Amino acid sequence: MRSNRRGKRVKFAIFTRRASEGAYTVEHILVITNLPDRTQALALAQKLVEARLAACVNVLADCVSVYWWHDKSETASEVPLFIKTLARHYAAVEQLIKSEHPYELPEVIAVPISSGLPAYLKWIAAETAATAAPIKDD
Image (cartoon, rainbow, N blue to C red; front, side):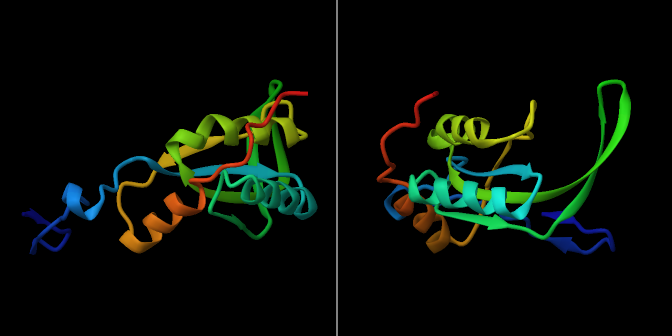
């Protein structure tokens, strides 16, 4: 038991399941990237899903990124993508992003999904189980 900010005792459950129920561990990941426009973001999302490298890709609303690049501050409009997949597909997801991305150094970040609705996590695993042939570098 831990205390919340108001001092009340609350239970924090770490997401664990018995092997007989199916284990949901850090095999589920959320990969985050940004593209410069909606057309490129939708095209990449479609390729990831059709290759069965992602069960779902959220193409979010445009945002503004502020970053340091080549010794100066830059600002750019970008479209973020949230890619739901499994850790074992990360290398192929990264490869596809890099092959389709117009940036010299694209943002590609994988965040472990430590818990979630069990049925949704099962769905991610099922929809990415039959991945298409590996992506090759051109």
